[in-house]
Amino acid sequence: MSDATAPKLIEVLPQHRVDETVLFDYLADHVEGFVFPARLRQFQGGQSNPTFLIETDARRYVLRKKPPGKLLPSAHQIDREYRIQSALAGTDVPVAPMLHFCADPAIIGTEFYMMAHVEGLVFHDVMMPGVTPADRGAIQRDLIETIAGLHRVDYAAVGLGDYGRPDHYVARQIERWTKQYEASRTEDLPAMTNLIAWLRGNIPERDESAIVHGDFRLGNMVIDPSAPRILAVLDWELSTLGHPLADLAYCCMSYHLPPGSGPAMAGYQGIDVAELGLMTEQKALDLYCARTGRSGIENWRFFMGFSLFRSAAIVEGVYARALAGNAADQRAHRMHAVCIQVAKTGWDLVRGD
Image (tube, rainbow, N blue to C red; front, side, top):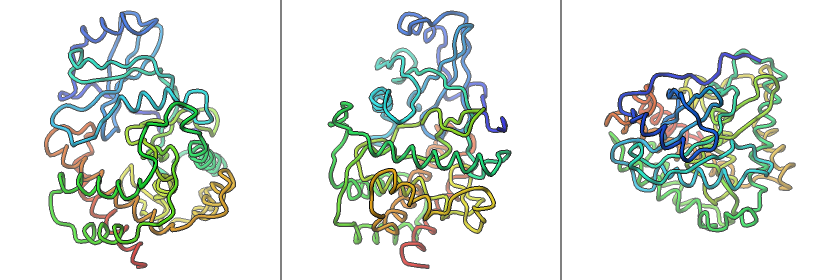
């Protein structure tokens, strides 16, 4: 497989620098096996919680923390990321081993956690350049099977019965992300306004509850460099208990977005997916149903519109943080254009255009 998509490392950005001496001394006392000397670098590509690689002569670690500055309400709850990945260890959902959570902001300025580094590739481009059609298809199949496995987990049995409210997830998410969007929007977008109104008026009556990742997409998977399979699911910041079809729709958004939508939002619209070795959207849904025991998917247009709305709200928040100088990714300034495009796609989809 191609190594062109190995996660890119950069020197720590000025707004995310920490006192490395204090940090490394703390880790030596709290993380088993941590030894000096150590080097800290930052992963380029994360739009939310800054993520770092720490290398010692003995081992590689990943540190994930909150961003600096004023944060939106209920965002960046990294303690939840640590908790859910700890709970999923040993299930059918591959996660990185959790090593330590630090609740003391005095160490580096925010809470943070440490996990083992999982060596692999991360494909931010859904086209997976440099990968054979057969391997593309295998990775995509594993993606759908992994999200199905997540939704099959008995959350009460793994200690996550109180991880979120199990009812009315979609209605609460519409209101939450509407508030987040209104707190960060930089101009009025009629498509977003119309989409919000339509979603509020068309919430499905049937409710379901499962663990939902909240950002389940190819770019949050670590892929084995030597085989087409997922080694770890990353970025659990938005995870909670909620409607599994909302999670699945987010995972399938690529089918409704054009190739030039940006690294996190690029899609297959207008592309012959069979030539790439990929499933059609319907075949992906059929596979999910087979793995979860569902007879079919209801209200798919609603859940896809909901996912596009939510994504537009998220990327507008990234853009707002970029304007404030707090975004973790140097590409964040392009996100307003992505917000406009994704909101329009969602509005066109739900009204049948």
